[in-house]
Length: 640
Image 1 (tube, rainbow, N blue to C red):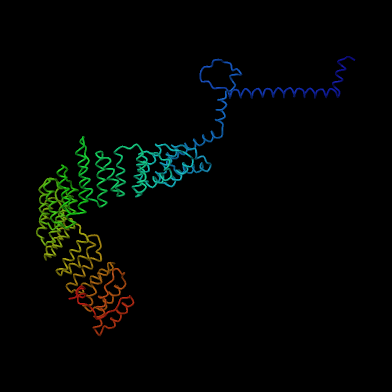
Image 2 (image 1 turned 90 degrees about the vertical axis):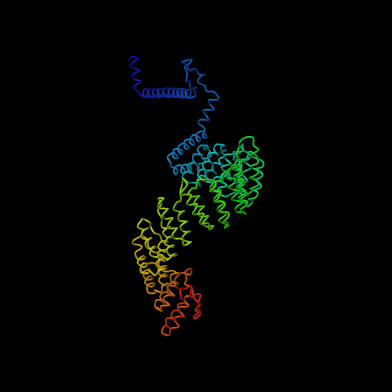
């Protein structure tokens, strides 16, 4: 047997099987070792690529050596910072800021505030930027969420953020423009130690305090305001505060400190402070002192103007006597400052208020001599003043001159005042002449003028003309008022035209569109009572009740004596029941009720009615005093 045959026999036996397994294990071990070595090498290569510096220029060498792959110390630090938890958190905060700003730009304030609250619970609101806070505040103010703004302000303070001057300027300007003055003061209370001494910041704060009446706060802020870089013109804020507080001494001291640098507005605030404090004489002295300063200035600068004199004149007019007012007026005109309408109206009001006819006449004369154009407002004021001062001829003369002068002529109000004054003088003829002048000037009389003319017809006893005038004016388009109806009822009642008065009231709502009131029905009853037409008076009462109008104390006090005089006892009981049922402020006088009881008691057949009335009065708490009715009370109630 050869060697090859022997080897084949051995391999085919048990030893051959073991050898095959050993061979497989060795192959597996070599493969595993090679795979681990290859993995470590690949990991090192990837790490080297991550740490290698990025080059944006041309490479000096195409090959990468081991030394070029090794990172520097700065690169390792930067890599650590980029991957640190705080850096990642800041990035998330910036992303959240951008998202919330997008919501605010889209006017989605609720979504933005909800997102802010979720970040606040994580404590990330402490890293928000100043610009973000300002945008959030602007949106909160726009939607009126001032409580949200105040809460976020507290969050901003807790975060340790120190806002810039521009931030405070923008925020306070915005709040002031929106009239959120309380929010301005809340900012000052929370950040008073951190607010910069800036004139814009503190001018907003001081003005906010003035607007809501926190005068002490405004005064205390002036010190920080003065530490800012303010100009001379910025001192106007000091005068505003002093005027609000009525601090004459402080305002006067600042005026003397500024001297010729005082502006006109500062002077006028100083004078107003004196006038409001009741120191008009001091205001007059300071005005003359300011005028002297103005004359000594090297440049042509003005300190005193017409407002300055008007302020002092008003103060002197209130303090009196009128001679001081005219002294100031003449000094004003000597300085070349012409009085305006406010000057004359102030003097005129002083004359009217003091019933000073001479003063009213002097003011009118000076106004006419000034050759100023007489506007409707000033003309009406002058005419009212002359009428009130019993200077009707001068008022008519002024109206005539206004018609002749170029410019605005008399208006309807001016004619109405004059017509009323002429009617009160019972001069209906001249009043009608003014109506003709009105029409020729293209003006139409109104319901007020018609009412005055109807009153004039009643005074002069011209009932027929009054009816004709009423009809013609209504046909011309005049719409009557409540007062017109009262005047017409008085005219009918004065001359016994009760049927016409009834028809007028009954058809008034259908013709003119509004229902007569209790005043009109009472006026109708009063006219009937004057002529002792008791049945017509009761018919007017029934018509009033049928129209759903309830009588008041005046109505019942007017009608009850007539029913007693006519001995309509059933109607008296009805009226007394109603009189006792109305409110205490419109009660019928107890003496009128007691007179009704007394008259019933005097009739033996109606004692039952008298007892019934007494029981009603006692139940209502009205003292019963029979047979003690004074003659004067009876006369006032309508008895003769």
